[in-house]
Picture (cartoon, rainbow, N blue to C red):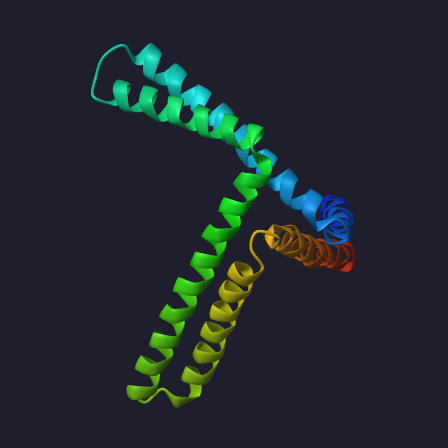
Length: 175
């Protein structure tokens, strides 16, 4: 039996978080950065502990080094949140640019192989990626709030979807 109530609860929580993130995108972006910092610290601590307790073997030095690097990076993210967000924003912009150009190239390859019905959407998708990348770079370093806004939009849509899914399961005939 599907627990439809949990879909609604999760959907409502995500929807509320989405409203918060859209209303305060800068704070939402910092929250994402802080969660990433703590994940690096905890993951690094586990890796370091695994490397220390392994005592021997080829994996021990790698685990210890990886753990130390993760902990140091996590601490740097905690100590320098605005700088970390600026860096994350540039990485996202580069990702948008590279995937956008790849999608545009793919669209031309589709067109040349006779797939006229698919090339236009691939081209449009690529152009949107390039435009987003250029906008993030052009607005940098003030563009880090865009990450929080996009997170908010994602939470709103996910929350609405999960709530509707819960209502669907609530009213679906028993199987």
